[in-house]
Image (cartoon, rainbow, N blue to C red; front, top):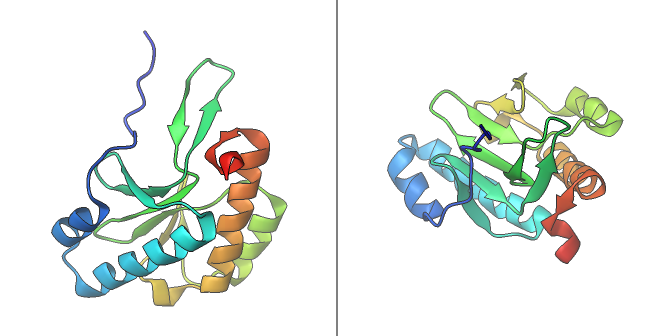
Length: 146
């Protein structure tokens, strides 16, 4: 049986999501700041992916197992405990960028930060752009259409 990806682009309003889901005022402010920054860096408008991820652009992946799907180029989710930033690709440059990133924790596929003031925004920008470049080189990518 084919695996169905649970994280798909939706037509839900990003603004409505933030205003209804995010309770903390600082996290709301940080969310709108991330939207402005990631829109500028990616060249794409924000879209909801699944119920809680705000993504920018998209790329298509396909694993050797045959599993394939679409995901945002970069994105984030304003979770209750911390922001989940989906901005990291496995490049040497990104590994070095983490040295100057600020206060964070890493997960399997994301970087967790409590608030935007805890991180270096210029490093986040470099990481986002390096990730978009990496995805453009290794996958079918919406960034090629720009």
